[in-house]
Image 1 (cartoon, one colour):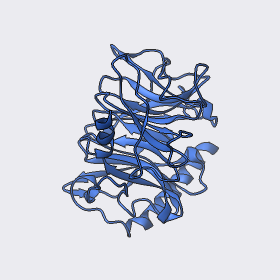
Image 2: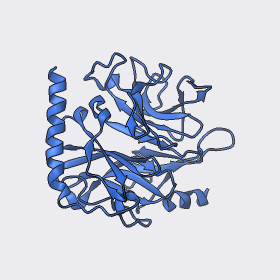
Image 3: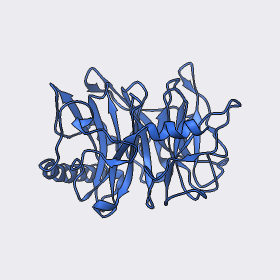
Length: 316
């Protein structure tokens, strides 16, 4: 009861702060909250969407771009109580942000699946829906938007989720293969990128992607292209790093391995950290979260043209 009360209080605080920020935010008609599309240099997405005192989390679009979900939390708030918000494009206008029904599951990291209907998220909820406070108990769940209504979230199988290990930041390819970060006995570094292939509706055992994607450092936040043609990852400690954590792209090789990750460059990466990548269903834009130097290094949602990905593909 104490945990639930704390979650409700955190949600109420965030909603109150959000209502103030909405007076300053400008959302236009049409796709992407009516924002002017970016070029190959990343820009803050929808300035004013996130209140000045809040940190942005993940983001994504569903239902052919007519539903936008994102998370944010007030500075100093326990990250386990980070609310998820939803906005809808109705009659050409975007609705005000509302707390998503599945926010009670505390989805602190998520991506939208390739069909634009399912949100795959990480939570500390156990199979019996009780709540753990241990990061090592993080598991991957999914919730689907059907006919305008959210289904009851379900936990994915035990070939992915374990009691002993940490599973986080899930991203799903068009063939159902799920990529995620974890810490396991066969990890190359502190955290590695893994995948589990979907075979006839069932997930295979976790497979470590190995080097060169994984390293002795903490390799995080994978995003896989729907057709599997590239993998975006958040890496640190590389010789070509521009900051603390940078976004890189890797491409599949004919032998099933992955190419040496290529830094997405100064149009995306900064001396600070960039993480939580997600490419829109139309393939046009890369969204991610980064520390904004114009907002006292508070986390903001950024977006940039996916040309930054294709530029690296051309170099392969």
